[in-house]
Image (cartoon, rainbow, N blue to C red):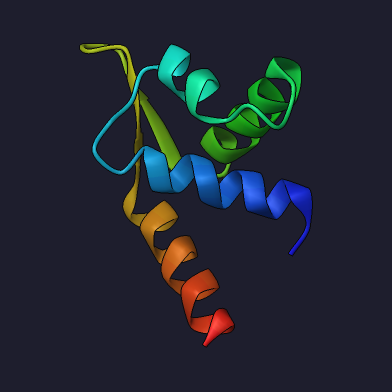
Length: 76
């Protein structure tokens, strides 16, 4: 799996219950903030992650959960 795919999986995993952007940055220390920002934009654009205005958090969508399930099944 590529670094980008690893980063997508990590963000989707930690966002399942909802997470603030600052907590995403704290959780992922092996890449730059600009790379995380680009990946967040890509995931949101592809509707795998949603930003909720009410509580200012990112949360994994059904499409994102399906993506994770597909990745998990590929590892088996």
